[in-house]
Length: 124
Image: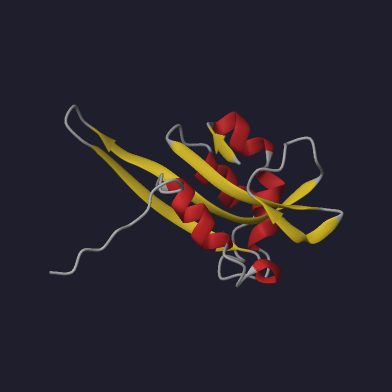
């Protein structure tokens, strides 16, 4: 799922805070997330777990299903001039219980717009 804009991002504030528990970002609680997610140029790509089935990870669970985040990656527009747009990616976080399942890879591919791309390497 993709969350864009402060209103959408802040509606899931507690899910972001819960995601960081037990991770390297454990110190990020509601105040830190509120500050980070309040920016106008933030897009979050999140993978969710169905609260009734914590082993099921899905990047496309509808918002109406009770969920918690399995992982996230933030896309930040750093600079936007006429010729080029500078984008940064960060806060790649995966819940400890969801690691080694391809969650970060899937989220990064989605954030980078690579879901449908195939990388072909030519060796000469």
